[in-house]
Image (cartoon, rainbow, N blue to C red; front, side, top):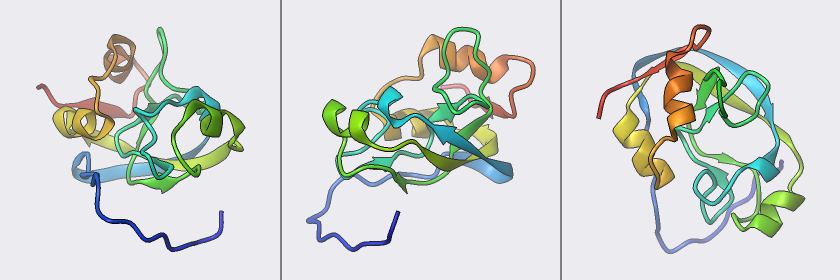
Length: 132
């Protein structure tokens, strides 16, 4: 996606979610149509703290958290269902390490789901979350 500059008049900022060092990174291909306005902000940026499985899908039942988004990443022009459904799948970088649950949930504007929380604790997960 080419770089561009957009004039804004302020708005939501995203806080870093990792506690200490990021222990490693990987790239996953995500299906943008699987995301909602909780994971993507009004300017089309994927928020920090979104957990993904190794195949790039959001964490579902019995899914293992492979990595968590590190920083805001421009993936669409907005966050409506129509825009997200039309957006092209893309690759994003996810990090491994200890994630501050409170900050991640503040960034998302929602609590982690029970599947996401369980996915951090399953064997094979590269991430852990702090208690709230």
